[in-house]
Image 1 (tube, rainbow, N blue to C red):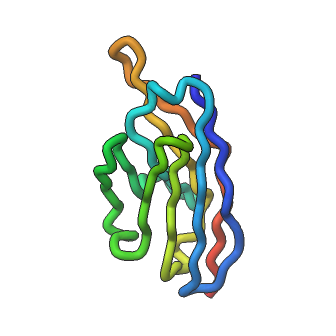
Image 2 (cartoon, rainbow, N blue to C red):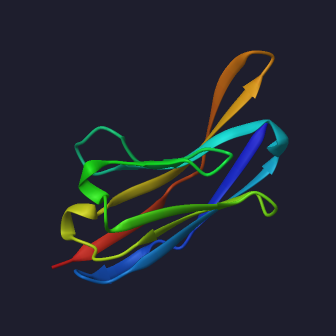
Length: 119
């Protein structure tokens, strides 16, 4: 089992910055990729950014050039630096960890942290 705890959300004006953190505990040695998803009211949850254990990254087109995902394997923590925030970035942001166990991939989710960008 893997537990994820997010922090760093809040209210910011458009053009501002926030940094989200997600700390993993439990069976962290089994974690492969970690990432961030978000869900705005009335919309489906969508991928924001993902990072592999060796640091390969992938971003949603809507955040490329503005967001940066990073990972500290020693601290079992993943970060999301969000710059040039826009009102459309407003959503609940969820941390995700993909854990491999006996050939099966499992998803672990954090509780979510609210990010609100005012115009």
